[in-house]
Length: 277
Image 1 (spheres, rainbow, N blue to C red):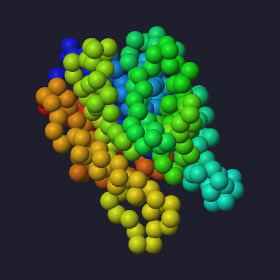
Image 2 (cartoon, one colour):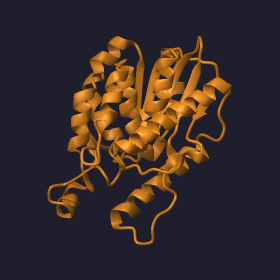
Image 3 (cartoon, helix red, strand yellow):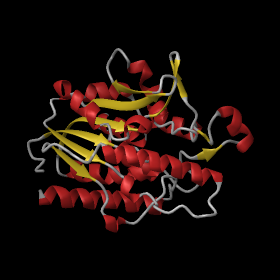
Image 4 (tube, rainbow, N blue to C red):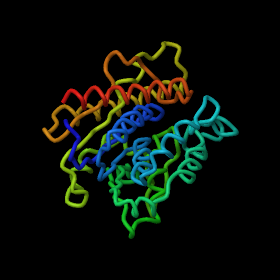
């Protein structure tokens, strides 16, 4: 796909720390003056989409550059497993919420003119719900980001009005349908879909603890749903994902060494695909 003259809707899948791959793709697109008219994401992809919709690429780089092994959005509860029981989640979401508060501003998205959308899962009803930012629903924006990123059993569900919401990846990990349904507003004529599921570590050790087993269960579920929706794409859509040679990473690995490798992988993959099409 030649991006020159295209109005692009960017679709970013979930994947925890693997979403650093998306940052590399975005870096290449920004360097090559891609005209992005809409950003639609799920989970960590929703957070990336929010910053890009604010036209704040520098903030996106700063966010991912701030992570380290001891500073990430994956933190255990102060009281460990005992607190996890009554909080309905393995991890404390406070660090994630602080990142959302620090780096995102829905009013800037509305001013930028770039459409923003995210997917959540209504855990109360068992249904997929989509969100497109508008003046009317602006107060719900940050709760939506929290909900879309609330990986089931890892982070606690988020209450919005009368319902509990969780990770949008459970129902649509790559929100291409949402982007296409918003075409009348975004005026997009091309779709760039970024998936990072292929860099998941394919092996679960026989001695894996409960937490790693839980993460692996979620990986398999999300990957299966994601692949089923990406098998057949229209001619106006390009899929960017890691190649087989990329190696494997963990969705929980926020070491800068791993994050920078993923960003570079995303950049190189975008460069290869766009320049060859």
